[in-house]
Image (cartoon, rainbow, N blue to C red; front, side):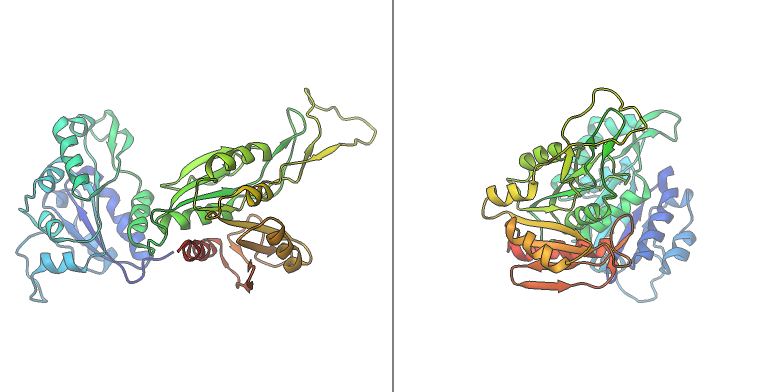
Length: 399
């Protein structure tokens, strides 16, 4: 995921949280964006323009009448060049001026002239934030099409605690990515993704599970979100990954609880991507206490779990796009194609555990996309990139 070819305009106003913004500028630059920074005069009391100029390789603009080597109307040129505008931190003063069309410095003037997506991250004392006037101003900005990024909670610079902190840099970057990184070809679509390993209890201590880490499913959920979808991620409790931003997270443990979650969330969706590794068998009975070790062999009776994909294939509404995953150690194409037909899927993503760079716990994968029309083998690439390929495939199918 990159921002190659995108121009990001950062507006920095005079709050202590301005110290976070060089990290944001640097992260956006690393993603390939052309980053331009506009600061208020008050912001320069917290951090110098030279920091941003060093990180972005672009002149940091502060004053309305600074020398412009290109001899252009600078606030218009910046506004027209921007693919997205992020104002962070946004003080109560800046939010108030923008809400009422006041353009008395470079930042507010550029913002008024910008037609691109506009994101604003208010950061201030809790009482200032909760003041009815500030809340009215933020509501007005939402009405004007701004995306108001909710402030984080925690210890504030004034020594108090509460809402009003600027969100972490990574989340601010995610907001920019969500706004402009991808074609919004899934906007208005609801996508449900499953991820991680089911865990079937044997006794209060032990479970039967598998090696899935959830990385592939999380990558698909993130990609669909960036393509504009309303995403619900059904994630195993065992997954040790950060939550996917802007995605509804629903946890599950067993195959039975995943089955219930799929029936609840997927049957009115536009697409279901079953990337979770679901146990085929579970213990026929669960011991009430820990099974004690003995010197004799232990036999564990197993029973079949619900075949979730087969049930979905048999009961899905005609417009639901279904994608399954197949992990094999032999006869990859034959077994996966048979699964596609048997379970009435639109697409199956097949990967061979014996292929270097594929499988559990790694950041890459080697997959073959199989439909009723044939198979397409993809080269080794990141799971993130495969997620975006699947998001585009879903968008094409739903057209």
